[in-house]
Image (tube, rainbow, N blue to C red):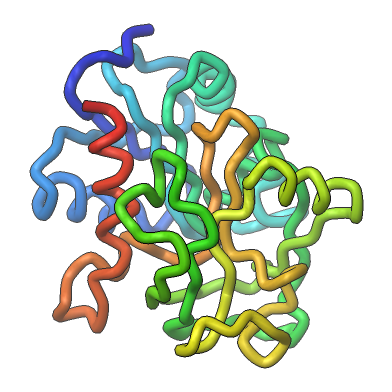
Length: 235
């Protein structure tokens, strides 16, 4: 499976996915790179060299978010793709799917407010030494929209220690001054965690929606650097 060609993104689509067209718009129309949709019943795709698992409500979030999607045929390909070093980003429901698939550690609980949240949130870039946030400066404060009901990231104490030791915490919720505390935590996520990567640093999951803030007219274009970082690490 070659990863030395120019960027060609595959955007996975499950029943209930609703953010795939936003991802396609950003990649195809704004950043001018090749991309295509991949239906969840496909078993492989040898053309692409990056994967986006977009947000939405795959399979209606039955059982729990992402729990059914992990059994789709395409996920066997995603596992193989990631094992060979291919870049994979899961956004919101995509993050939940990566957790269910054990491609990322931890789990998602219901928001501690027990309410669906839909608003912009400030984020602090905790780590920029990875293929997904290399376009930001470490410590930069950015703004992205969140829209989820189960975005309360949880991991046990040992797992949290591992995340910290391996610099796997990529984004944290914060306020406009960059303070990460309970008052700037929208959903109860442990230590305000909003995004993490795997130990190999080629799989990234985040609850905020970068694809929804890549143009100034939307209120922020801070999400653009996530996709640009991936592109620059493929070329």
